[in-house]
Length: 430
Image (cartoon, rainbow, N blue to C red; front, top):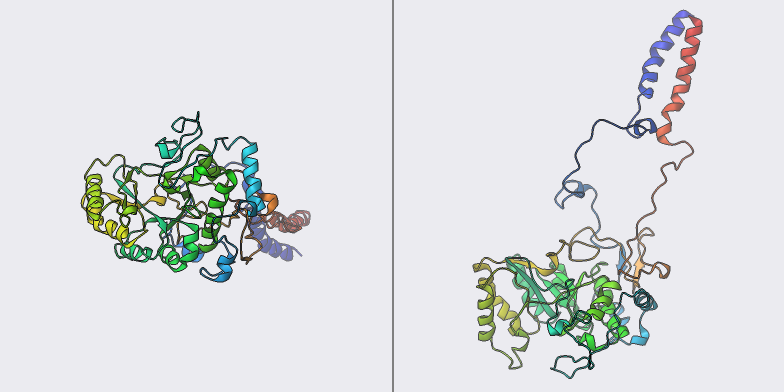
């Protein structure tokens, strides 16, 4: 009998000692402080080239299947001209009303204008004062972007996509550069292949409204439609990306318009600090020589603030004007960067860039022509409508720590019970 007990102890004691040592996931391990405090890493995320990304690749889209860009299904649910304010998604209107009720949208009267003339506000309204702060009148709201960082040429183009977009994208690609395209919604509908050329080349896409109106002349619902439909179309055409920036046509914005863009749709307003007038190359407003003279003056001048020049992909002439000026940009030591990548390093509200693999599923208040691929990647429901931002991140439901009757971290204690019994019997046998 003594030999049996001795053998039993020889086998059981090492097992008992092993299970008595707490492991890093056990409650015993976490119930007291530890002396080892390693420093936090410099970054809270892995860089794109980190090996872990090859093992756990994230999605370049939001997990939703959208209608193919250019198809009739893709375009059919969007306005074919100026948006009808009485046919806006209820979610957008509710978000606007909530922002107004919260005092986030200033009660500024609409301006009026005739084509080619700056908008005019009613008598007694000062467009240059802090209450209105019209960008048309060169009032700079601190939240708007007018200047690039020192030494930076913040590259962007307005009014696309159009046929000349193809030449522009090819030129950027051949020089390993990217730019930001502030696109008009109806132009995306009419030129889907040019849109895809820019997006698939990792260029950044921003909002330039649906039909290019003077925005301060519109009422709140009209502003909502001009921004909302353009955001929605870009969202549906880029794998679920939400634009972060918009540029008002003609630079026409004020505190009311910019507040709707920010509070309802989460977008920042971008203006410019120089203008060559390239948009008028085909209408007699300027000449290629005059545009080049302006670019020469800008590019050989001070590097602070950096340059944010208004440029257009409107005509072959305006694209050619930029291509002709490109050697001056590089030759004078400017760092050409896509405008949307300059501020916070993220071109979209829910993704770093057009080809990044970090798209966060997001509901832009309403989703058109989509089929959910995964229940954990759902779009925003009516009951979740946000009043101050354009989307709500859909996060998967966390798994409870104690999902089974007996948690893994507590199972070592089960094995300690027979060990204790063996120890007691061994003592009595002695």
